[in-house]
Amino acid sequence: MNGRGRIIFHIDMNSFYASVEQAYHPELKGKPVAIAGNPSERKGILVTCSYEARAKGIFTTMAVWEAKRQCPNLIVLPPNFERYRHASKAMFDILRSYTDLVEPVSIDEGYVDVTEIAHGIEAIQLAKMIQTRILHELDLPCSIGIAPNKFLAKTASDMKKPMGITILRKRDVEKMLWHLPVIEMHGVGSSTSNKLKEIGIATIGDLARSEDYLLKANLGKNGLRLKNRAQGIDQREVDPNSIYDTKSVGHSMTFPSDLMILSELQTAIEELCMRVAKRLDAKKLAGHTVSILFRDANWHNYTRSKTSQNAIFKKKDIEVIALSLIEKHWNGNPVRLLGVTVSNVVDQSDTVEQLSLFTYEKYAKEEPIRKVVEELQYKFGKDMITKGIKHAKKPTYESKTSFSKDFLDDHRERG
Image (cartoon, rainbow, N blue to C red; front, side, top):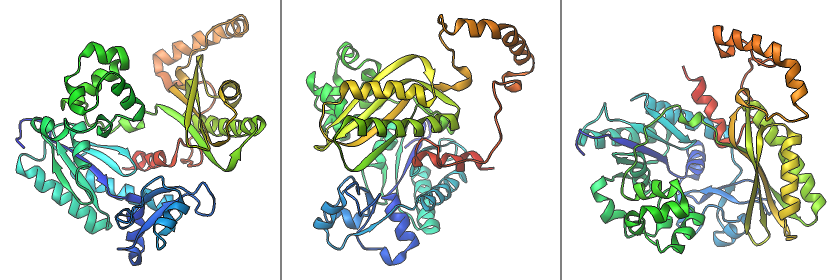
């Protein structure tokens, strides 16, 4: 690689949870290890597994009972989230020892822009140095993709696991990617893949050569974005702060036994809405769209959503929409998983309630006070006066979006 363009690394920790357990318990090294939520219940699904387990046909999302039948000597462990957060923080600390241009994507992967600190062959040497440090200091394996942009770097890191270092140049995209099925492209899920197949796009090459109008008509702006990626084009910067941009807040539950009647679903929806409301409040967010997800006993997923004029964050408001969705769209089949998500989120302080006959009088009374507040905020800053009281407090982990987001507190607190 030459020094004229950007040089982006994508670091992907290999079988992260299982590898952390093997690092903490050396006696597990070389053995098939898997992490599952609750092996004693039917909802015990493998979250991840070691490469020794994968060699025996075990894979992520496999049911524990099925994995045990496939590999009788499989060692199944419950997750230790604090241990994984600690390992993640140590990994990102190593990356930041080289540059501040580090963008965490999740607990076990991130991008690094090394354009200013490595050129040509130095990029490969730097990748080897980072990989070796993570292995020697943390006893954890990782794969690294090297490319001129984020999409190609992510694609490259998937090409050789574990402990791989792969370079993917834009000029190699046609030869290395275009023959692959479009479902193998990063950013294309089963739903998008099916839509593409309906318009005659089966491979990444088909996508790269497709007509703009066809993609835009069927997939909107995302179709044009995917076409650019298929051509190896991606202008996104490595942004250390982008991970804090929450797009949605949700929670789901898998049940020990299928829910068969509407009242059971309603009770579960109420519990989920309470948890989502707590998380929205903890993040000071509100959202316009409420979605429900339910999975039946045959593992068919159904998602339905409704968008509100006003951004909402209170339990009762989320609950009204979520309950109406489940009552309208549940087909009567047994439900094994249920989820509620609020998306299109904004900061609560930026929400604007649409005026109605019922809210106009309240706002009319508040108008003189609101004008004074606006004048003070204009003069001294937006945070000078806020509605209610924001108490400074230590981070709480029970009301965040998910465990994979909890590790953000480690990044916020550094320094």
